[in-house]
Image (cartoon, rainbow, N blue to C red):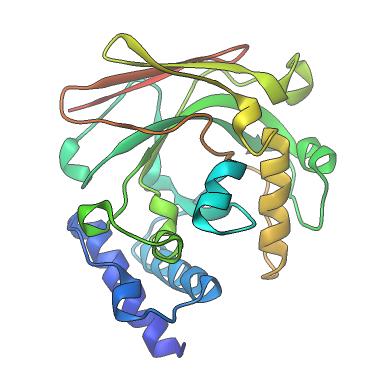
Length: 260
């Protein structure tokens, strides 16, 4: 795919995110689009955000469930970029008008204390982590009727929209078992999902290392101070105006958001 085509699709994706307006799948117009081209579109759309003054603050991982990867026919998770306008603190009230069809999933987030460059191992990746916190991600595909392929999702920055970070930050070595933290998500006061951090690529550190290794293939790396969302521990739930979501994570406390 030529650079002008990359920019053409990046403009479509970026405009949809800015205007909060659904679009048709990109692959309907370009069925030959590859995963690498989708990542090129993602980067070009993020470049537009940075040109408007947003700051790159981290990355997110998606499709960190082996079952989901098999379901969509990929062998690796996918990733997206996070900018400062996407980051909120626990208790945030998010305007429903910011989203097309928002869904929320419970996660853990890493805050890096050191640069991290692949190739690396989970143990080495964890050594670069300063702290871990409970987190919620609001994912919001820009595609009409929530219909898309994995190629479209990647081009759409892996459905990145908002992340909400818990206030309790814990060093990885202070946790009894990062790889099996119990997680309970409540929707309007009712428990709707229970899970474990073990569902995140079998261990969140695996997800972090995989991200570093995937970025290394493009000559990129993670930087100290960046946030990395490790991936969903359960399926996402749909949310709408007036909803409140909270997740309680063993050893990491709770994080919550509401939709205004």
